[in-house]
Image (cartoon, rainbow, N blue to C red):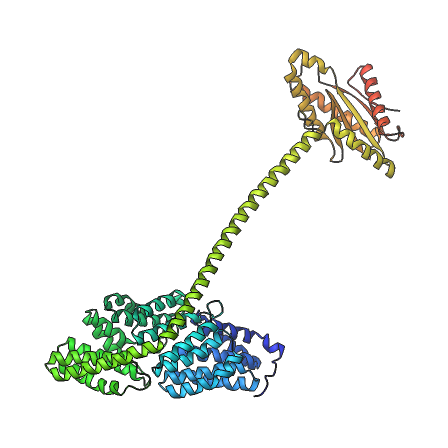
Length: 600
């Protein structure tokens, strides 16, 4: 076999190839989006000469046409894809294209050709393909064996297909496997178990995004419920299938099995609905599938019997029984049994007891063959059931883990949120404590502790940069009189107002502190004593006005005395600077108050 030649990196990364690969993965998940992406990929690939992109786009289109159109429509796309993959030495793509061709032969009733081609691909496919791709090849082989009534072989390949295309990696293909398994169990007469797999298949995908697969599963459920004597329960599924559009947005142009639904309608006593479905079945374009022809004959016979025309019913069934007696590829024992059972009933109603007994014996013989077939297939079916149960348990465990993870994540988020809130609260508390440690509660200004911590650093910076640092110490005049005559509350209001005025009158770089009692200290960087005196003098004028507006009585608290010094007049240390300003304050108070003095 020719060794695979690595494709260029540019081809692997092309937009067309990415779109085509995504279309392939969506074939069983979102059929409408899959064909849309495949068409876009094909246009891009052809415009840019992207062979790999074109091959995978045609492959996705070909399989979509198998599911939604006729095999003759799909064949050109699949053959074109096969040729491209052969030129690229893309063995996986080539095998998948040939698998699609085999499925097309199977859809046309050419079961031997389909099986021969699929089996020829098996060994290489198992070595080259992965996951859903292997599952598709194996399921095609299983379908061919099913058509030959070799259920034990069909189950064996379905078992292996399910192992290779589990839910986590099968891109929705497990729903197809549930559908096919249900169909095989129906042929064996295990209707209760078949119904479980129909339900499981329907639960594995969004019906609106793959209406074709949904309609096939609904038809299977219609057959199962009818065989279980619950045809009335199938009427809802009949309406669902009939409501699916016959185009690429719905079930496609493939036969919707109107004859199967007609049989269920007659079994449910819905003669009018049955007649309508038979009429629709007559208009359907069909592939040469013998089993479909037999089911149509059954529906025609049921309609004739409902109309009281037993002779016409017998005519339809006589023709059908000749084909059912021979059997052959693609004709299940389930349908052959149904033909002879209905024939015996019609013959008995017509009074032909001998012929009715012969038909009943033929039905009994075929039912025995069916039971033997079920027995031979029992081991493989049981193994597959075990595997499906294990996979379901794994899915349940993963779902439980996901829910537990989501709960843990939610709990962690709640814990983190609570922790974040607690951190915010602690930080706010720390800030409040810091403010309390450095701020005067009454005036909102910094306190003496902050002054003692800040002034040394500001002094050192002024000395290093050779820039002046001015200090002013302010004392409210006759403040004791305010407390004595008007009470401490009035004094506190006065101190608060002065602190507010002081804070609003300074620069951002200035530092205002409550020095103690009615004394305040202001630090003014890059300001000499003269400049500081002017600022404090302006502040004194504003305070005279504001304190009077507050209702201060007499001279108490309506003025202040201040002493100013700067670092050029006290070069020893910051304590000396503070003392020079304090000395000037004392002089201002001794010489009549209501003034600002500056150290020489």
